[in-house]
View 1 (spheres, one colour):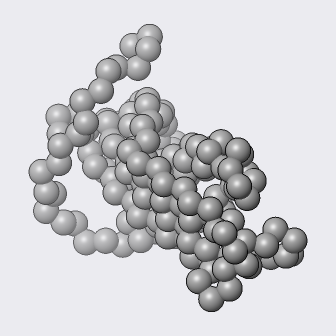
View 2 (cartoon, helix red, strand yellow):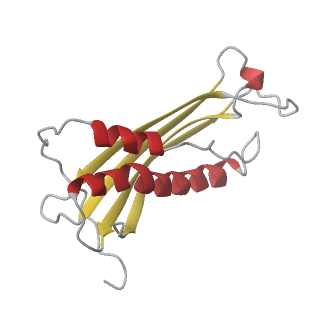
Amino acid sequence: MPCKFQLEQYQLASVAVSGNEAFDGSLARHGGEITTSLTVAPHKRDGSRYRLTLDVTVKADEKNRAAGFPYDVAIKGHAFYIFQEPCGQEEKESFMHMHGAAILYGLLRAQVAQITAQSVNGQFLLPTVNFADEAEKSKNRLPEKAAPRRLVKRAPPKGA
């Protein structure tokens, strides 16, 4: 049976959106560079809790700005998850890298869409990203010595 986990809370750490002044909305295709950076940190004292940090950067095509994305975007968010039943460490890490990241990415996508809805080039949805590759990479990593991590203090979820 697969692990069950739940999003407890998410936070925006930073958001930067700037319009691409050369953007041509009449073109059929637009592109650019999309990068994601993902960090998973287990809670120091509670093995069922994790913090996932996701940095997403979208840049318009530098060679042809008119055919580039309508905005340059840099957004960073944190998501706090709790596993609701015992799971192996490897399975938790895999879930965080694939499912946890996909959930947070969707929340960050909504924030960007809301910000750009009233912006110069119109609403922009972050392009789709496949986190399955990231989950596969996490399975193949050698165990590393965990560096001390400081989790952000936060209020417990409502109703807890």
